[in-house]
Length: 105
Image 1 (cartoon, rainbow, N blue to C red):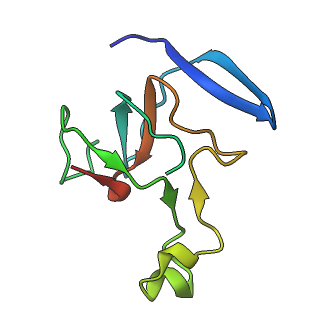
Image 2: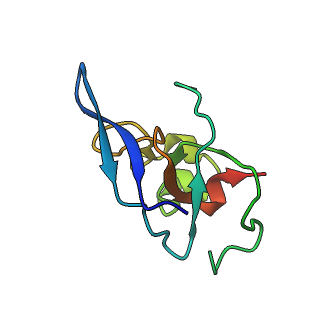
């Protein structure tokens, strides 16, 4: 695997730049994804995915602790973190870490 991670980074409204960033290290509940394609808008503890699986991601990852999350309405979570919504970077890069629970084969 390469050590380069060419990434499109939104600095502010109207300012998109390319940066070479380090390949991220996944946390125990995340997977490292080699990005093949991205639609615009729209590890050891992981059991349901293995290296080489092709996945789609749910770009919004909720807190899983609030009353909405616990009630099955994670789409209403006030602390949801969306890919590509500053300050959270998106997946327009070669390698991207994402929560495994929100990756689907």
